[in-house]
Amino acid sequence: MSSLKLREIRKAFGSLEVIKGVNLDIADKEFVVFVGPSGCGKSTLLRMIAGLEQITAGDLLIGDERMNDVDPSKRGIAMVFQTYALYPHMTVRENMGFALKFAGVSKPDIARQVDEAARILELGPLMDRLPKQLSGGQRQRVAIGRAIVRQPEVFLFDEPLSNLDAELRVHMRIEIARLHKELQTTIIYVTHDQVEAMTLADKIVVLREGVVEQVGRPLELYDNPANQFVAGFIGSPK
Ligand code: ADP
Ligand code: MG
Image 1 (tube, rainbow, N blue to C red):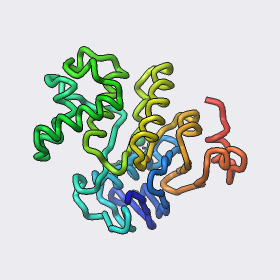
Image 2 (image 1 turned 60 degrees about the vertical axis):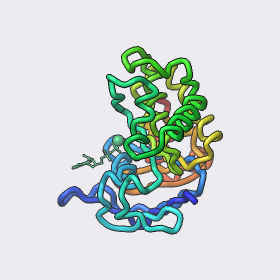
Image 3 (image 1 turned 90 degrees about the vertical axis):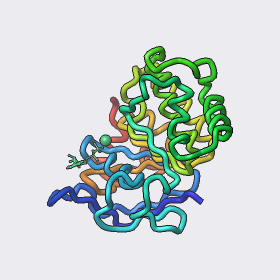
Image 4 (image 1 turned 90 degrees about the horizontal axis):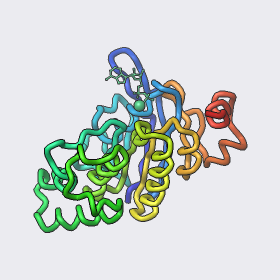
């Protein structure tokens, strides 16, 4: 079970509180998109869920288990970042298998999991290339592949497409929607691209200065924004 519950989650850096009591229920297999202005706390929330940042107060539950103090590697979560570094001296195949090797997964299992991810992302012909021999979009697919091979129950994406050009972003958006269908995992996805949010999300969470302003299905927010801030964020042309 990979439902998530955030209960009164807070984060302070020193005396600066940046997440101010966030409550959120995310269902198993749901595709949830976080939107909000730069600095509102989207990445910090993701990093707390992933275990890369300590939770200052509140509870994070995955299934029924409290995860606040569970090691990141034991949360069943994989995160894909906006800026990701592939290992330059390793092939695509090696890049994708490396974390598994490190985790002590057997060679045949690594090969199987890497091949499966390659199939899903259509990376087959590129498996023996080095990162410098790939385009930006292909590199981003390898970064996603590295997350898939770990077979997480929950994926966290932090603005994964914002470094790609417009055309490629559209293509990758379709890929990510397909990925969600095929893998049947829970996804939390951060973007500042309205179209991405509206087309990918089962549920959109609008954040402002560390507070949830509104949660709803894309059309709910579009048709019935709770306030001017949400209206401005969801409805405005980009
Ligand atoms: P977003 O991803 O929505 O742009 P962030 O989660 O990165 O926002 O940041 C939220 C707030 O927390 C910002 O004011 C940012 O400056 C602050 N912040 C983030 N990380 C740190 C840190 N390690 N130390 C101090 N302040 C931080
Ligand atoms: Mg961010």
